[in-house]
Structures are given as C-alpha cells and as structure tokens.
Image 1 (tube, protein in one colour):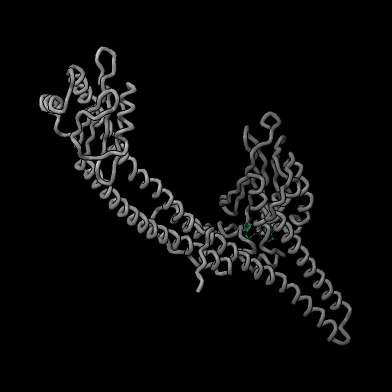
Image 2 (tube, protein in one colour; image 1 turned 180 degrees about the vertical axis):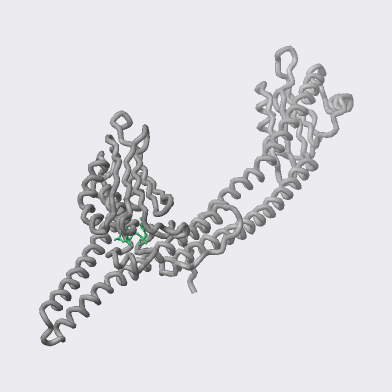
Length: 468
Ligand SMILES: Nc1ncnc2c1ncn2[C@@H]1O[C@H](COP(=O)(O)OP(=O)(O)OP(=O)(O)O)[C@@H](O)[C@H]1O
Ligand SMILES: [Mg+2]
C-alpha cells in the first residue's frame, strides 16, 4: 500500500515548520554553549601558559652555560610541575633539557618558530582531553639563546565539557520529542475542527439548511463555526420565505384562474344561455383577468425592488406625485362615499424614483379608501421640516388591530381575507410600500387614528441642494 503524503496540506506544512524551527533551536543549543565553553578554556590555558612560560624563559635567560641539572633546579624553584612536558633547547635547537612525556607532532616546528623570536600557542580538544602547547624564545640582551616548550593535557576539563555535551544532547532529544508530540496533538485537534467545518459546509451546500455545527470554546475556529451557523440560519430563513412566497403566489394566481375556468365552462356547457347571463359571466371573467393582471404587476414591482440593480435616485416632488395618485383614486373614493381632505406643503422633495414614490402614496391612500366605512373620510398630509419630509394618511375606517400591525407588511397578508378579496386586494400593496420606503432610506410607522381608523406615517430625509 502506498501512502501519499499531501505536501500541500496544512498539517504537512505545519510539521515542516515545527521541524525546521526545532532543528535551528537545537543546533544552537547544542553548539553554542560547548563552543563558548571550549573557547573560554583555550583562553585560560593561553594566559596561564604564556605567563608561566615567560617567567620560565626569563629565569633561564640568566643561566650561564645551562645544563640539565640547572634547568631542573630552576623548574623546582619556579614550582613548574603541572606540565606533562617541558623542553629547553639552545639557539641551534639542540635539546638541553627534556622532561619527556607527551609527544606532540608540532613540538619541533614550534621550537623552530620560537627560535625565530615568535611565541606559539596551540590548543585543541583531542577526544576528551585538552592538549595545549606553548613555545617561547629565551633571549638575553636581545640575542636569542634558546627556546622553551611547554605541553599540558587537561583531561578533567575535557571530560566536564564532554559531559555537558552529552547532557545537552539528551535534553535536546527530549525537547524535540516532546515538541513533536505536542505539535501532532495540537495539529490533529485543530485540523479535525477544520475538517468538521468543511464537512458541515458540504452538508449545507447539499441543501440541508437545518444542519447546525456544534461549536465549543471562544477561539477563532469556534467563532468561524458560529458565523457559519448564523449564515446557515439566514439561508434557511431565506429559503423558507422563498418557498412560502412561491406557494402563496401560486395560490393567489390559482383562485382567479379557477374562477375563469368555471365561468367559461358554464358558458360553453349551458345551452341556450340568455345573452344577459353570458354578458354577466364574461364581465366576471374580465374582472378576474384584471385581478390577475394587478397581482402579477405587483409581483413584478416587488421583484424589481428585491433585485440589487442599482437604481439611480432623483429628486422627486412628493406633492406632485400625491396629486397624481389622488386624481386616479378620486372615482374610487366617490364610489365608496369617502371624502378626502388634503394639506400638502410645497417643497417636499426627496431622493427616490417617481415610480416608487407613486407606489407608496397610491397604495396607502387606496387602502385608506378601501378599508373605510361609507361616509367616512381620509386625510392626506404632506409636511416638511428642516430635515424630514413626512407623508401621513389617516382614515376613519375599520382600523387595524394592534397585534396585526407587524403582519400587514408581509407578502399576501390580509387582516380580513374576505373583505380584502372582495375589494380586489392581493395583500401585496403594503409589502411594496415597505420595500420601496426602505430602498430609499425612509421609515414607515403605523398607528391608530382617533377615534377610529388607522394612520400611516412615512418619513424621508428632505432633499436639499445645499445638503448634497
Ligand atoms: N388603512 C387600513 N385600514 C384597515 N386595514 C388596512 C389598512 N391598510 C391595510 N389594511 C390591512 O392590511 C392588509 C394588507 O394591506 P395591503 O395593501 O398589503 O393588501 P391589500 O390592500 O389587501 O391588497 P393590495 O394592496 O395588494 O391590493 C389588508 O388586507 C388590510 O386587511
Ligand atoms: Mg392595499
């Protein structure tokens, strides 16, 4: 079985990152302390060997005709015992005194260098022991008379350093193992949550909008999960509204269509139907068709308001729009024996579109007439103050129960289904008003009119040239 490592995965990258970081840290930890400890030992060796070497060289310089015994005497006097080799030569490099012992490959070479009036120090760590050599010229009155060579091996320090290295290495391995285990645990925990999130997204994308992720904690991933749940909730809500809307709309269209069918069937199937009845039936068919047309027009208006197509607002004179709407609605008012009072201020200009403004004004006044009582009245007022234009429609009609005031703006909603139907309403007028008001940054409020009826107030920011 071949195992494929996904080198693009977050887990792989995370591991590579952690491993590189560990490598750099542990290399530093392993080398830096031992190198600096070793350098400190070298330095200490150099200063002690050079001071003692110099003391020995000046003591030997004053010996005249030095021989082995005298040199040994000087060494005793200066208490130089801790070197494993002391060598003294004359100016030709011939051995005068040699304590023997450790043999360094560089002895002869260093003695030659010392004879050419240079001091030499070399130290190295061989195995677990420091091996240091020092050569210095011996000179009397500016003339080189010989050279001294000292050699020392220090196993103790070497072992300490070696022990330190071993300890650091052990600690490093433990740190590396612990860090990798922790990284593995952490990354698999985090990745499991990321995978859960993407699995949830697939479920929701598959159409199950009721699915919710279980989240815990307060970190970024939990936040992401919560956001995702909120988003899903909104999706579910939109989907629910969409379904309701489709079913309501079909129902709304079905009823007049059924009437049309029934009426036309009756005409076709009833033989010898008198022309007055036919006329009556055909008129009814016409009315139903008209109702269908009104409903579809309103649906179109709503869907246009729903679209995010950028509408270009223009300054609209609300007074003019109101006068136009009133002209259309007067016959209806007369038919219902409803009187209309108006008080319309000049200069009520708002930023909107004439069509949307007409929808707002028309639907509110139409409702005030339709849901009125015979000999009732409707008041239409338009007023502007420094910042706002307010348009008020009040009536003395049947009124709206307080607990219905939220519902009336919903699509296809009617308080009294029978009455609205009879009045030819589809329950879409106020949804259009609501959406159009919102689309142009206005607000709408509904309340009771005293002593009876209802009152709608729509407010918009006043458009003025100085302000824009
Ligand atoms: N001025 C009012 N007085 C009493 N009830 C009202 C008034 N305006 C609206 N309503 C109630 O609110 C419901 C919704 O009104 P809306 O204008 O949305 O629909 P509609 O008038 O029934 O139909 P459409 O306006 O589409 O022809 C109405 O059916 C009616 O019950
Ligand atoms: Mg209406």
